[in-house]
Amino acid sequence: MQIEDIDLTGKRVLVRVDFNVPLSDDYKILDDTRIARALPTLEYLKSNNASIILMSHLGRPQKKLKDDGSVNKVKFTLRHIVDHLSTVLNTEVFFTESPFGEDALKKSLELKGGQVLLLENTRFHLQEAKGDLEFASRLAALGDVYINDAFGTAHRAHASTTTIAQFFPIHRKAFGFLLRSEIENADRLMLSPKRPLTAIIGGAKVSDKIQLLNRLIEKVDNILIGGGMAYTFIKAQGGSIGKSLCEDEFLELSKEILIKAKANNVTIYLPADSVVNSDFKDTEGKVVNSDSIAENDMALDIGPEAIDSFRKVILKSACILWNGPLGVFEFKHYSKGTFSTAESVALATKNGAYSLIGGGDSVSAINQSNLTDAVSHISTGGGAMLEYLEGKSLPGIQAILEN
Image 1 (tube, helix red, strand yellow):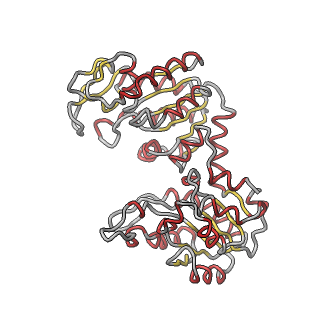
Image 2 (cartoon, rainbow, N blue to C red):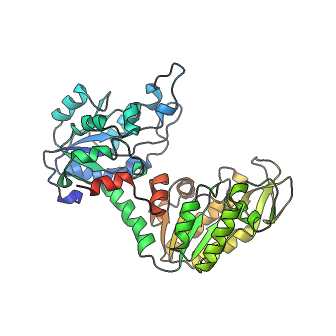
């Protein structure tokens, strides 16, 4: 069922959004991307005279309890975003101190078409993460229709993302435009890509990307590996990597990945050179061959030869997936590999390639490079996109598709 196929007029529409936005110490929104990406769905509901009840989480309040063991409601309350949400929606946003109960139900019933109610942080309650049936039923009582537009939490079998869907028949639940777009863009890259298809995979650990790498080997033509994880592969091939990040327990698995890639005619590119330092600090480093790093040095970025090599592959690609930074890009001296890659992906896109930025720090790199509009699609879900690309069934998606 598509959201366009549901009669929304006069209906209370319960929308699971992902408004888990970063906040400053004085609770100002630092980046409203997740709110902005949800606006098309919310504007569509407003234009169809639906009353809108929004559910979201903010942070991990159950894992950052106060000294007395209670939830820090001052830090993690969604009240912090009410004024900004009112501004971008150009309408008053009502708020309730609990995501369920008498006040929430009363306010949901009083809403008129086009009005908006924001529920308090669903993760203030342990039942949310447990996917509790009763908790989900109390949330479901607030709406006639359920829309899931929170791709960033689609891999969580939580009450507000998954369990709740069973309380709505198939003709009263659907994906929002954001979540639908995430699925369509990921499928475009994994199911029917133009060739050559190149994956750029960075980040710290091989262990975080094993399943993704194994799946990509069955799908792509090239894999460019950077970040800390590259040095596990380099050591597996007999290189000297000094104090660079390495997971020794994954050396054999790294060898197997390299063998599997070759058997599948997939070319894996490792950085030929690296920028190293004797300490993990933002001071000028030196360029050395990646397989000849001195004992007391560690690699913090890919080097100029690697940047040039990666760039040539990217510019010859018709489809590009990027997940993870290629160095410690939060350090000015070790950001060139990541930001140069962002520029290469943007240029390839300008030349006609399709590019998907798969969440996490690679999204931050694109945003910081002011290239947000220069790539094809930026995913709002780091972990969710990773699992979807790995071929896993995401519970938040599956729940909408089931009767």
